[in-house]
Image (cartoon, rainbow, N blue to C red; front, side):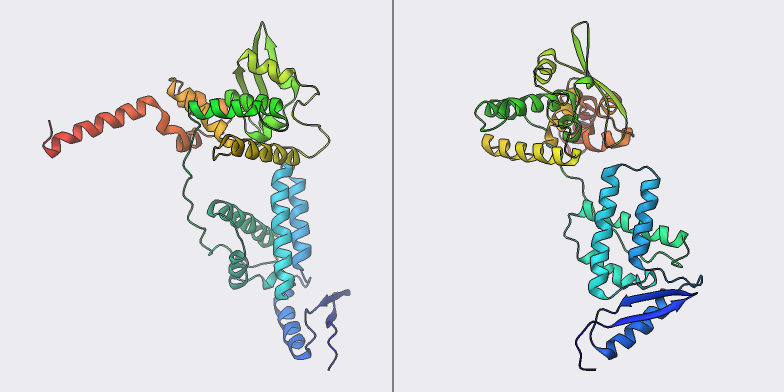
Length: 338
């Protein structure tokens, strides 16, 4: 009774030996916890479903669906976080994942509202899987309200900022020439950094002196074809290797992270507060200001839905702004202004 060693509970269900650590050295706490496990952990099927086992089977199911590695990686992060939380709280069986426990788990996240909303969706997806497997009667996350998400302002680079950043490449300590080629590629193609940093030479197609980027985007899987200025295409093709900005040996996420960090240092060097995604915003704004339709810009960006493009870039459409200006001017008459 005085021993401080961890206490284990052991029993058999349908001939199957089950042995689990109770997460305590106190016999009174251990007896109470064992009773809770017995009530919460054994569903109608008679098979005790451990949280660890359920999470592994969930990930196996995701892999069987041939989802993208980046998607699997995010769900695996959720698995590790939930597993660590459950171990600290002494939760072993799926039946112990209550509304209160999962609300407490959500409170441990240090994420921005948008990331937290996506993490909540991944957690909800796992619990839906548990329901389909008859391990839970209902989804305890269903009643957890998602955080309020406000769209971040889209901030394209100004012409002066673009000039300043590209000029800073010439005095940048490191891969200034390659970084300049990558910046121009993103500026004139609208590619996300993950696609631009891992681009293959084969994706830059030449025909009768004209060049285009032709590839399938990693995030949405949509096929895009975007014309490139010859000088931009030639600068990328002048770099050695099958992948001008990537060795091909590391994971694509690692390559993307390295160039993201390089851009952060370049922006600091140029004295501009920015992220690489602003190249994509600048590409979109320049097209819309030039009179290119929102539908065409959506196609070039590889968006699956036009509503996504409208959500972020509609304010740059000249016709839309002209209509707004006209409506505002008409309202002046209501206020007595001529």
